[in-house]
Length: 314
Ligand code: AMP
Ligand code: MG
Image 1 (cartoon, rainbow, N blue to C red):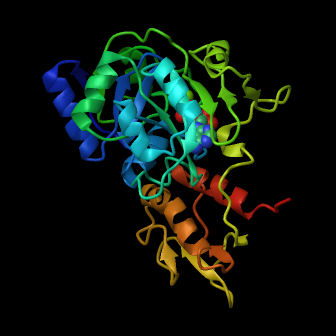
Image 2 (cartoon, rainbow, N blue to C red):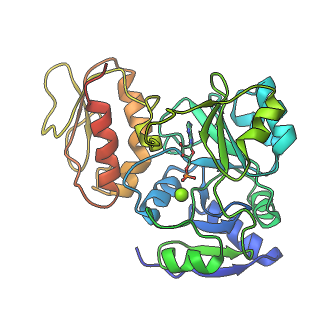
C-alpha cells in the first residue's frame, strides 16, 4: 500500500473532496474534538477492511460510527430512555453510546465485529460535522494512528504515522480534548466501557444512577477479548484443506467451498467478507470448516478472529 496522501483544507472544496473520497471507499483522516479519526464509509465492507489494514491492527475490534445528527442515530440503533437522556445532555460531544443495532441498517459486519450492538457518536468538532454532512452517511473511525502508537491530535501527527497508507487528511488544527471519547454501554444496564473525554461522574449525574464498571481490578480487556464478542453457534475447524461430511467450508483462494472469503486470495477482500460469511454459514446449523489463511497483513486479524471462534466454549 503506497498512495499519495492529500492534505485537505477545511473549506468547501476540502469537504467536497473528502466526501467524494469516502464515497469511493477511500480513507480520510479528520479531526474530532477527541483525537483525529481514520474515517471510512461504515456501509462499505472494503473501506472498513482498509481501516484495519492501514492501522495494522492485529484484531478486528468493533469501531465507533460517527454521524452528523442525533436523529440519524435512531435509524441505526434501538433507542431507549437512557439513550435519550445522555444524547440530549452530551451530544454533540465526546461520548460514545453502545446500543442494540437495528436490522437492515447496511452497516458493515466488520464495524460491529459481528456483534448485535453498535457504538455511535455525534462529534462536536465543526470540521467533523461539516465532513459528515457533506458525506451524508455513517463514518466508521478509530483513532488515526498505526496500531500501538499514540493517538494523533494534529494533522501532522496523522501524516507522520499514516502518510502513504490513506487517501487524505482533512486538516482542522489541533483537537481540544486530546483523549478518546467516553464509551457507555446501554445494551443492558448502563456500564462504563471506556473512560474518556467526558467524566463518568457527569454521565452518572445525568442518568441519576451509578455506572457499572467493566471488570474492576482486572486488566482492561481489549474489545476483541470481550466475552460478548461474536462467536458462531456452530463448531469451527481451522486450517481445513477440505470439507468433511456434514461440514460447510468457508474457503480462501482457489478451493471448492460453500462461501469464499476471497477466491483471488486477497486478504482485504477476505476481511471485508469475514463476518457476513460466518453469519451466513452459521445459519446452516452445520459445523464450519475454514481454509488456511496466511498469517500476514490482515490475515493476522482474520486468524485471530477465527481462533476465537474455534476456541472451546464454557
Ligand atoms: P477505537 O477504535 O480505538 O476508538 O476503540 C473503539 C472502542 O469502541 C473499543 O474500545 C470498543 O470496545 C468500543 N466498541 C465499539 N463498538 C462496540 C460494541 N458494539 N460493543 C462494545 N464496545 C464497542
Ligand atoms: Mg485508538
